[in-house]
Amino acid sequence: MTMVGEPLAGCVMVITADRRKRELASALERRGATIQHAAALSTIPHLDDERLIADTRAIIANPPHVVVATTGIGFRGWIEAADAAGLADDLLDCLRGARLIARGPKARGAIQAAGLESDWVAESETAAELRDYLLAEGVNGLRIAVQHHGNGSDGLDEAFTSAGAEVQSLLIYGWGPPVEPDAHREWVQRAADGGVDAVLFTSAPGAYEWLGTARELGVVEEVKRRSADRSLVMAAVGPVTAGPLEAVGITTCYPERWRLGALIRELVRHYAEDSVGQQTASGMLVMRATTAVLDGRVLPLTPTGLEILRALASAGGNVLTRDQLAELLPGAQAGPHAVEAAINRLRENSGAKGIVRTVVKRGYALGVTS
Image 1: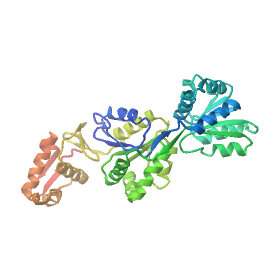
Image 2: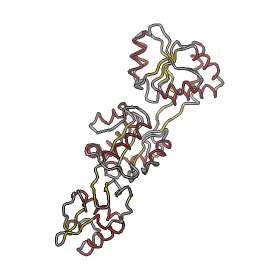
Image 3: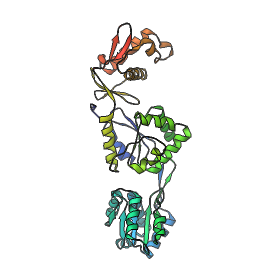
Image 4: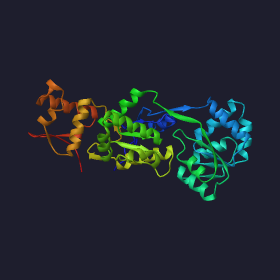
């Protein structure tokens, strides 16, 4: 398909993440998208958690052989909590004597930011790869400290304990309810109703909670239908994040590399290459959830004009009668002269008179050229 001027022009995208939402939004807006923030969860830092400080003191007193960092934000939060308690120097000295294992590049980056070096990185960013690596090496008799993400241990504690290790768990942050629950519910409903082009997920817990709200609203089947016909793109940062959605039959897309940058590129690729458009005499017409894009321009249409254009586009160049189009007009306006006036406004607002052609004595059709 022909690429429009800005690949995400006219797209309404909902970001369900609390963390790094501004970074993600800025990158998408630069490419033409309209962003709505409706986090499915909030991130709750445990920086003043007495248990975390007590666990940190215990680790300093009895240093581990292996330290597992599962998230960048969690590892940084641990160092910040230790610093606030006056324990940062002692903790860093302790960590320098341990093998540092990172669940992915973001965790490795946090380790490096603390002035440390990771000994091994799970490039797939899965707990399973990290677990299998350490179990293959053997952990019997080792003390292992595991920094967890907000959704728990992913089975790491149990696996290492079963293999003979002594495990110390550290929960640095957790998940809480959305800060704006009404906005969250509103945008789940709008996604099901066709008012959204894409919903973006950056964590499996967030996807799970979004799905739970969709169940409460009774819209899961509609989301499945829209994701299947690609009128709604359910985009995840990776397969683990997409898992809760795919488990109930919702079609998702995600990049090969689990990064926000890769997710953005995947969305750009989808809307530049896979969006279904129709070639008209005025350029490529692409219908979005809440607008239309013609030759790279978001058209300033009235709600009625948008509905008429959507109906004509769906007809694919076939003629719609005046009576059929009259059904799209507000109540008392529905007459042959009102249809003609609405078509003229549509042509004028779009800046392209040839976008709709008049078929004498029959009605109107989209001005397709191929």
